[in-house]
Length: 192
Image (cartoon, rainbow, N blue to C red):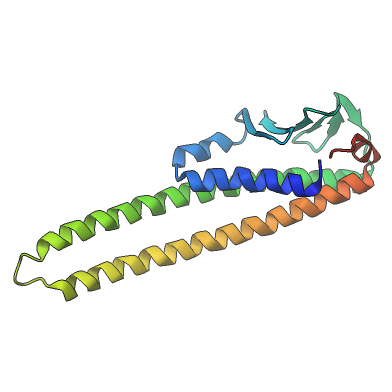
C-alpha cells in the first residue's frame, strides 16, 4: 500500500463521517467499538477492540497495531527498538486522534445542519409575518442576516477543525513513511 493510499483511506473515512451529517454515524468510531472502517482498493482497515488491523486482499500480510503499541504481522509479534516503538506509538495515536476528530466533526456538522434547517423554517415563518403591517422585508432581512452570521461563525469553527484534522492526517502519512522505511518487516510486505 502506498502512503498516498493510506491518506486516501483516512480522508475517505473522515469525509464519509463528516459529510453524513449524522451524529449517530460518529458513534461508529467510539473507542472499543468493532467496525470495518474502510474496504476498497484491496486494502481493508478495521479498528477492532482497540487494535488497528490493516490487510491487503491481493498480498500476504495482516498488520495489527495494539493499543499498547505492539506491532504484529500475520500474528507474529515484531520486535521493535525504542525508535521503532515510538513510531508505532505515534502512528496509533494519530490514527485514534483522526477517528476522534472525525466523530467530533460529524457531530458538529450534524448540529450545524439542523440549525441551518431551522433557519430555513424560520425564514418561511417570517415570510408569513410580512402580512403584519408592523413587520416588513427589512425586518425579515435583518433577522435572517443575524441568524446567518451565527451559522457562518459556527461553520468557520468546523473549517478550523477540518484543517486541524488535515494536519494530523499529514503527520500520520509522514509517520507511515517513516515506519515503512525504518521497520524492515513492513517494508518487506511491499504494500504498506
